[in-house]
Image 1 (cartoon, rainbow, N blue to C red):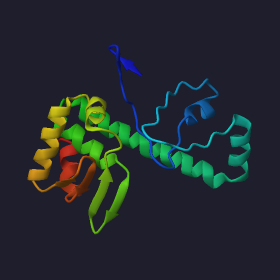
Image 2 (cartoon, rainbow, N blue to C red; image 1 turned 180 degrees about the vertical axis):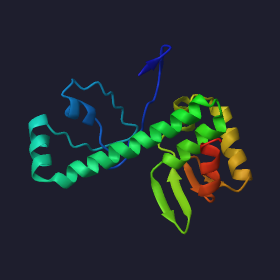
Image 3 (cartoon, rainbow, N blue to C red; image 1 turned 120 degrees about the vertical axis):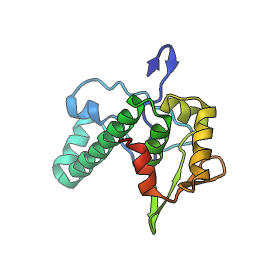
Length: 165
């Protein structure tokens, strides 16, 4: 999407994510522009085949609805953070919404794109993003490993930052 003549990243997807369900559910022409940042494999369905698949396997429909509900929650959290003008809240919300694994109350996530693109997505500069990540690391809430790997050590603390009261 273009915002003020610049590309605006609306969402990133990873293994198993779905794109284009709006077009399927509404019957409108798809408007999604997807750019692969690395070699990728995709499965594409035509409308009739997907309808038949969902009719024959209703649990797939439930999983699609759950994924859409999760995405809506993420967008609402990010929107709340963005409208607060609080970059810390935006960064915290973004980290919490990244897919990852949680073990013993510690989450491991990976930035799906370079910090420059993450900063653009969050409506900030790469320098500000780096400073905010460094501050979260210095406070012990997260640990940074290399350019993209992040360990969230204090999920509750990060949630408090993501949803300013």
